[in-house]
Length: 235
Ligand SMILES: [Fe+2]
Image 1 (spheres, rainbow, N blue to C red):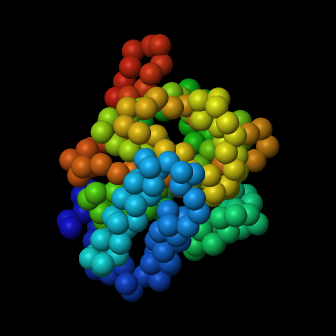
Image 2 (image 1 turned 120 degrees about the vertical axis):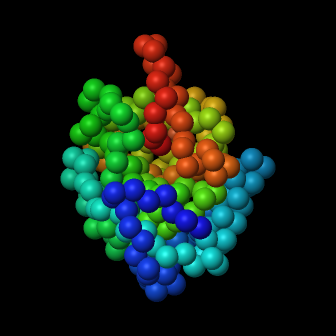
């Protein structure tokens, strides 16, 4: 497929098959969605299968990677600790594979205006999607990093199904439970969710978005604050 290029991206001409760090990273993401249990949920089983099928299709197509300018955000100061914790836990292979590409990631806020207090506590980086670095039309894979003691405001995603899997750190969604590394949460389209992280350690989540190409290339995100709702990009 053609990736969506802008002034911050360019085609590298380097195929996925010639990029071992990215190939192995995708293998680990696939393993996260293949191994373990669906907890008996048909919806989660279907989502996991969709994610695996879409990763497989991209690996088979062997696209040229898209170069994106590496960008850090203040929360990246916690990435080392998050990866260190991750390599000692259930998601160690994924944490190690991520460490290999950490210097190439483009961390973003996704907001036209970052909510007060969030700029130093949160950022996300895409691994696969319409903008690369691994180009794909029908799925977005990414990471979101939270500093300790962060609240990510309530929001929902139109026409996009989202899952989070923790690589490192504990988090809660909608005050319902505490999730540990390896746990998966499925947020179906339009489901309202709000994330909080623990007091001491950062939290690194992998996420997958599935949806139709038109929506993934321009994902709207609706915030549900009592103030005027705004449509933004973001996780
Ligand atoms: Fe979300």
